[in-house]
Image (cartoon, rainbow, N blue to C red):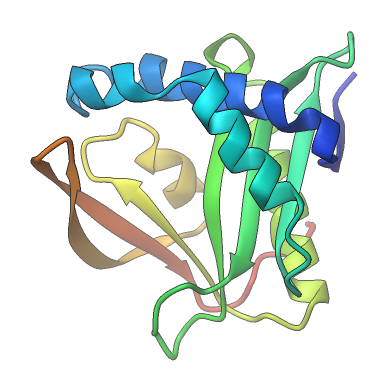
Length: 173
């Protein structure tokens, strides 16, 4: 059974665990090892606690649970954090444990967050993805088109990111 629900403060450690595990399993060989090694569940938990306490309009964090009610994925979404007149909202993070990928968790998290953004009146959706990430095709399959590029430094190593955009915020199909 697949359950998606709003994240609660008590979920911070589980979200942090998924965050660290997915970065290490997904970005090894792309992001410098020193950067990945510096990510700990403890420091990510502090970050997620702060985020989950935010009351900003349009900001949302959802979790996906497996049949044992264990958090195996999450998505965070918010009003667009940079200036681009084509988009009003963005997916700031979406991660699913490797053991649960290709089981619709990511797609359902994406659509649930997108739907909430649309309900908040935010139109046009954006997401940044590492150019070398094998998961770029996930966003392309959901109808996103590459619309921007930038370089981000990770432990002193510049890595290209590609921005995917949707002119209309996707909603349930």
